[in-house]
Image 1 (spheres, rainbow, N blue to C red):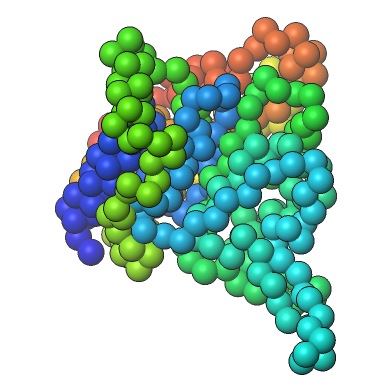
Image 2 (cartoon, rainbow, N blue to C red):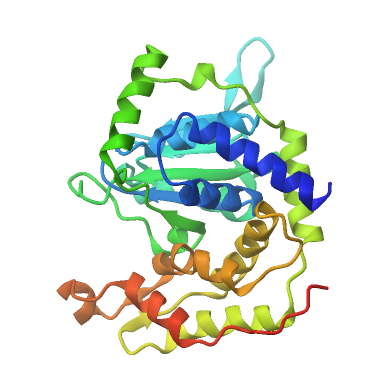
Length: 324
């Protein structure tokens, strides 16, 4: 598939999602870029801002299979990955697959379940496979998790461990709409749908196979100059040298920034990465991978987002890069 066709298809996807979810186009592009990079997304924001709606609309538009898990304190790992069940009529165990056997898994309020349940997703998210009673089963490509959590409801929640946070390619915030007109548009669309959930009204733009082809085109046909690679490395390493930071971004953070920058280039019709692709995603890729020193974390006077912004401003981007 040519890059021009990738860009056209991406525009169709974001236009259709934008017809149901009222929000900034940049946010939709970031969700799409993460999906093209085959990366997981964590939506973190206040209740009622459309996090679940956005995830469900995106899953339906791409034409991929999708499943939803509502995380609760009594959820068990087998409720997610599945288990083997004894069948009396055949006198043997058969595999009952869990909702993780899909293309896009919507993990709603992921921090509502205890660590034992959260850890069941670690193998799925990193290795795209599941181990059930000693048997390892691959997950069908593409596979990525779109998870949500509310930052203000701490009672009855279990903070995600650093190992799991590091497996999310992006952490995004939907935010409030920016004007009265957009707030009114949300109400108008609800009236026109005549239902709370408009998912049944959505017609897919792509299919499973087409979306995989989009991902492969981004991986194979988007060029990234060595100077851009050095630029990414400098940004990631600077997060570790900051005096306010206890643990900086991992090498996986650099790889994530690389992949999503290539995807963003393809969305905009380019077969090469420019520094602005890196800058666009630096905060969403790196902030949740930074752990502040205890005295600064407790004081709440230091914002990791500001640290990343300052790093990006300080590091000189490459000026003369080759396209091929």
